[in-house]
Image (tube, rainbow, N blue to C red):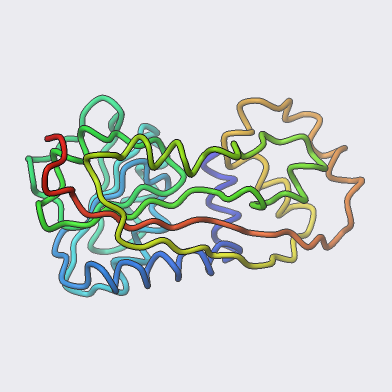
Length: 226
């Protein structure tokens, strides 16, 4: 999964999403000095944020030691720690200026505890149309149509929504790109990897695939739970 993620993201297929996340961070947290990503994987998104915020240092947190090793090399101002973000974040209370949560579980109590009172939380999650062409053809997991509602409900009343954007773009993917896409996400745990090449072989050799991701920016609610 880590190697597939590194291959796919290295081809810049999700660059429009990374750029949209960066713009949200620059708009709402341009003065952040410490950014943390919970469930950072190989550090792709936080590395882009650090590149855009030259006075900021970052910490990538992930359960996979293999992902954390790659994240630690993703940017000169980025460190990485292996940890289960759902259990407890290895950070002091109110120490984070900017928290990122991209396609990852949301440890809401720990985000509340560690985020500075004037800090910002950026959450990115797939919209219904995200990779729908591949999902339909390969039999990947579908996107819960109530996902946006569930995320909003989980963050209320501790966080208040400041901004919401939709990043939607088109990708031209070859068969090896589609295979990496399938194997880098949660569907990899629910699909027989040995059947993937045969399913992909039936697809167009250069397939147009939709990317569609929601990006929400939050602040800590003044009277939220702590």
